[in-house]
Length: 639
Image (tube, rainbow, N blue to C red; front, side, top):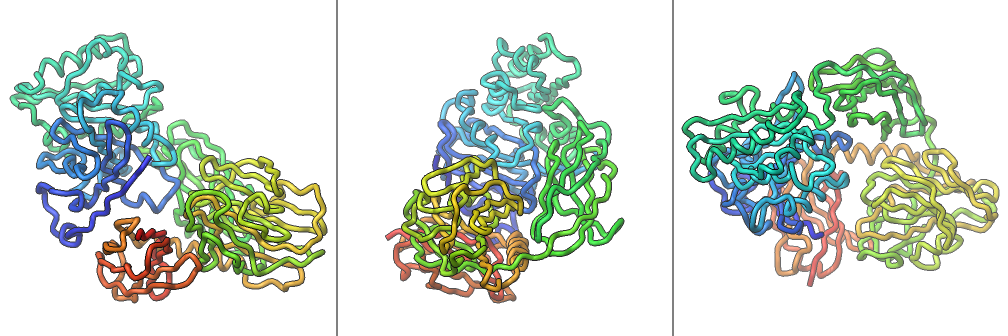
């Protein structure tokens, strides 16, 4: 499926400073709702609003609210998406656009919605027309959604869509609660909602002449008349004297009309059937599974049944000075702490939390990282279809095996112990094979003599020896993969643990060898060590520097449009949360790793002429005083 983000650039500075409720005339005027164009049948696209800090904690999951628009907001799913937010009436989408977030405090804890607002091309919001959209967004790889807290609301045509999605094509049940507004439904299917134990809060104006008040009331009453669990809340709110347009009072974000308001009521519901009314039990048995020079893997026992998640805290001293370093979802009982200093003692504790509050802490754990490992960064040569950027090897060629690879200048001499290794710093860039070879014959993974093969799609890890592939299990972001020769045996290690070895003796000289599958696939921070080389820089220093750089990148937002770029067009670059008093530059590298373009930037939105570079794929970085402050991007320029 083709998915395209339309970057909001026109008048962005002025909008962010002086935004008021007014009609928008294009997607470019959107600030806090990102237009996503994607072919999902009757849904041609949707507006995406993510909670503040969504990209900072990649383990946290969020409640999802989906808003279905009315008849007048139908469109093509691409250039028409602004219509969903183009309402003087205050829909959830409009509130997110104006406020910049959709966050509410429930029982003392702040919760922020992922808000997605799909656009219907034609017809009604039938369950059939919604099904491809739901299948896509509930895929774990697309959004970090707490699937126990998925909520659906809609107005008018969209309100009917909320009923439709709840009673049709909803097995197993997706919804923690629904809120149809000024809507009708199919009375004959009402008992399906009761059977699935879906809480409902419905609204209707008593003087509605568009969709008669009796239509909404009869549908609600039909659900209530079914055999059902009386503990599942059903609410119907008539708006006395109101007509069809009741969006503003229903979706008000304060408590002037309803307390709790609709959003707070939704957040009190959970599909798991456990509505938090007590603080969760504390976890215990916190321990370390493994320690490396830069990583510590923790695990604990979950003693709660009503937690939303767990918070992990770390300190350098016992009993005090703790900082929260991450949170994980409910039922997750392990965490890997990355980017640590070698030969250092750390203290950890964990606690559960829900909307009521935090549990007591687990036991305090004292654990130390191992001594640093010596090794030199790999200098890649015979590079094909890729570019070396610092210590990383990044694929620029099109998708496919055999068209992108490289070998190391450095080697492990014959009859000498040594190893190569890499760190999985981004699980979405792991379609590759990496290891040791007697010689780099070509860019095929089948000519790597001893190596690992990885697939980002399913997280599978294989041992590869020439044309033989053996399944080893799953890999995780943060894993260190090493292929090591000890005497004449090749050992395959993950995070320092031997998980396999070779059955054939190896005595020849060896070089690092890489083959990459998907454009953007990256061999991160590859290192090589030979017993007689004396080693080089400390591995931990480069790993720590990468994660420190990554922390800085979270503070800088980079968007480029269009991509691919045609030679006759200018590249629009949007940078946010950057201190332009420092020296800020855009730099571009070609597929041979050569610096081919460098330009100073001094404003949030820049238009850049890159036509002199010619048609090719380039690697773009943003530097501040020489340090990278935004994640690198591949830019394709078409002739």
